[in-house]
Length: 204
Image (cartoon, rainbow, N blue to C red):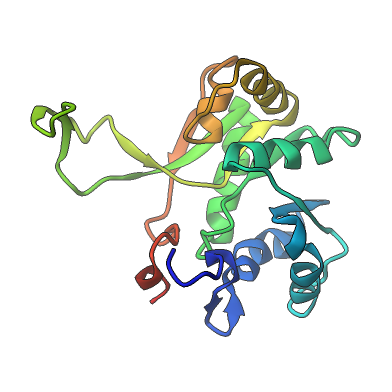
């Protein structure tokens, strides 16, 4: 995102995006700990910022990694000693998360061991070659857009991230990391309002 300020720190409805992304998890009362990864130099500032909007006794801010995947690994490592049975991984740039989606993902994670929310893609999908020409059209019935939060058995997703680090494998999301060692990953209906902020205009 242009402008220098991290999108998670931008103001949305008089609160930082990150506050909107975290608060539904705190409000649910279902989680004993929320770990936020961010640049080391921002930890003190963001911890103080979050405390202005919510009870932060269950929130822990830690330094993240160079990539999103590495940041998730550091967050998982933070839970290594307490070893929860299940964990949800959410993108801090998705501030429109609702409690009903959190509950849907959790319920399916309890049942299947791994679950992600997915949404239909309204555009016509094309596979193109290296020169930019269309190879074929893809069926929208079997191709969906993945969202977060993504839920997993903690022990399995941690194992999968350890394996990805050892193999130096980079994945697009945690469901792909999980699939390195385990199958299957269930899906539930996502929420079209649960958008990810990518560009400045997404805030509006």
